[in-house]
Image (cartoon, rainbow, N blue to C red):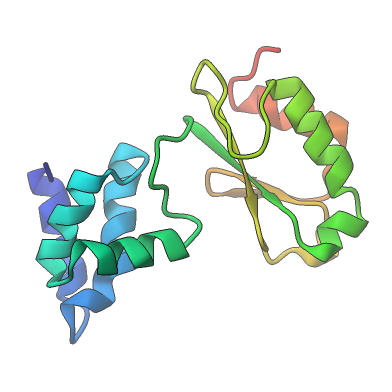
Length: 157
C-alpha cells in the first residue's frame, strides 16, 4: 500500500504534466527510492493514480532498466556492457566482481548487500570500463579499483 508521502510525491509529479500517464517513470522512481523496488501491488496502485492499466504501467517499468521489479541488494552495481567497455576490459571486471561477490550477473549476494546487473550504456565510453553503484559513476576500472569501491560500500571479503 502506498504511503501518504508516496502518494503526495506522485501527485506532485502528476501535476507537472498535461497527462497523468506522462509521470509514470517519475512515479515509479519515487516508490523505488523509498522501497528499493516496485512490487505488483504497488505498481497497481500507481497505475490507478495515473489512469493506466496494470499492464500499461508494467510495460513502462520493464522497459526502463533502472526500475527494479524484484528485490535488489542495498547497493546495485550497474556494469556497462557496451562495445567500448567490452574492448577496454569489461570481461576482466565482470569476472573479478563475480569472483569477489560470489554471484553472477542478475544475482544478489546472500547478505543482501550487492546486486550485480548489466546496463547497456552509462555514457562514459571515453573512460571505459565503467560501473555505477547507486547514483555514483566509477570510470577507468581495474580489479584493484573495484575492490576499493566494494569496500567503500560495505564489502568485507
